[in-house]
Length: 555
Ligand code: ACM
Image (cartoon, rainbow, N blue to C red; front, top):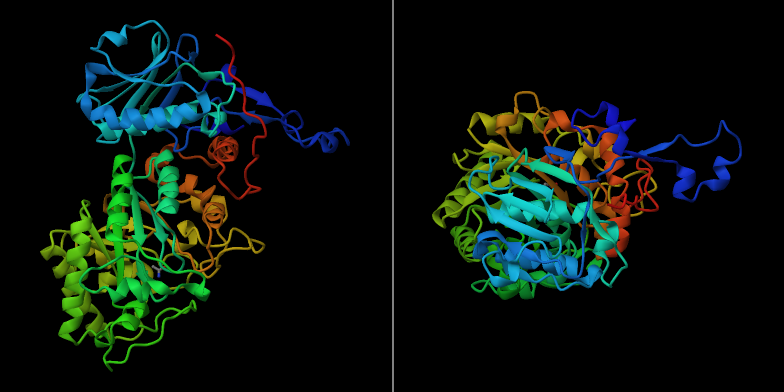
């Protein structure tokens, strides 16, 4: 039974609902064949929150049932919480059909007791950092309190997950909108909980990126890394080098589609993410993975000849001409414009898979690129190969070459990075590359790092993967989605779900509290949530997906 081996209290046995596959529907004939063939009873935990909170325990008192008169109350009328409150109202209104007015507790409209409310409050005494929060059901509804608006926002995502899956529907549902009595204390393990989207191989436009941001926010991610350039496409308008977008953005893998973000569109994405406490990290991959730039400007090529646009999926064949000063003017202009679009602290300089340069040429380029990033007031991050250059103390290294991809140098790069004082973001391909096929029969994706089922993504410790790298060297985890084979939003969703939930738990939940069976029991309900959201996903056979949501007892 999953709960028995979980070190983190879920709910006591009495509160656990036991059902069976037959009762859940779909397996009735199979279970009636013989007693021996009957499926084992399935234990349904009484909450399904992902990522697992630090502590979530049942509390005394009746469930909270929201009604049409329920409101979102800002304790002390705190204007800093207005944005969080309005996002919560927007999330709850379509399915409930309720107005969810946002009111200040000091205003005349906020007399307690009329109906269960959601109260949002700031309290500097809440421990655990800027993402930490407490959530409690009370006699007057649900109260979420944190030291920062960010913490309150994370708490509102937990609240959404405590409501029935129908809450995510885009049209009014019957309800009831009930939350079991509960007390949650929560704070994350890591400060970097990221996802990367490759918009270069195939372009994903602003509305698609926002849809992905919604999903990331729901699972308490706080970093969206956008891979904005590669051999097959350049996806961000650079005013000082306009052909990067207009020509370099006109291709993609197999030539299906084209596109780039205007700077206005990009700023809008950054603002949308920021309202959800997600930092956008722009990546310009260099000096390799640069065919789209080389095709746009002949002077970036050592022979002054622009190559044709590229629509294949090979890697390692392109490089900026690192011996030319124009290359560094180009890098400086691009980084300057990107830095002006980026409120966050990081610019990603790529640095992976360069096969055309000597080690000295490569290191020299990375060192200059780092200096340029610093000159524009940002910190550099790069793929783990950059650890072979001299790193600035603030540079972050993104580990990707670990596991089955057979690169002996991978661990050495990480050890070199930490020896230089760099911190690591862990993205081992054989575990968290969400473009890897789940199994040999997965239609989409690649398999160069192996097949990556849900359990492969879940069952490892970012702080103990590489000998010589310990948890204090690790800033967090990030799950890349490369898009050589990923064309539509539905493709994207099928590859990230359910593995994104394993990454959410890796980034948020203390290692001692992570347990595979308890995790899959919680994931089991999220299929119903995605059905209600209209989001696609892979029905991994490693999860006993629920077909009906458990009902809470009436008060
Ligand atoms: C990478 O997958 N080339 C970072």
